[in-house]
Length: 202
Image 1 (tube, rainbow, N blue to C red):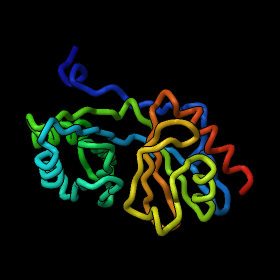
Image 2 (cartoon, rainbow, N blue to C red):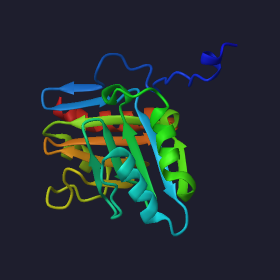
Image 3 (cartoon, rainbow, N blue to C red):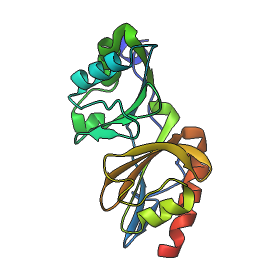
């Protein structure tokens, strides 16, 4: 087998293959769509290395890696979200960053070195974006966290239950728009629950 084929990463296949078109829900003031072909990397700090890992991530990506719970910092193509104690989830579009597939994983492994574990979750996660003026109401039907703008706004995130499934929720902007990251094995059930909650706004 040629070296280029042997070293190539497997193609990323959406867990929502049966859904056609650009959006799952596309109402006048509400939209649900899959964020496809993203690189998703989880970084976990080893014991007593929390600050060292956060510093390494910040330096490598040029994005502040928050050490406080519930914070997600981002630029135009990469999000660095708190994902539990000593853990961060990095969600990136290689295409928008003009980065080769697999390059982010390698650069983070080198930066973090022996202070933490760097795990590629790209094939194990499904990323969605829910946006529009009714998005907060749809989210409120499915999660117990306080989504009032005073309590939860752009740049904040939560690892919580959504539709009784564990998900990472990131508020992107004031529209409001929410990015939702869920395990691939739960993706279809998760989408069905969110889609059902959207129907009253059709």
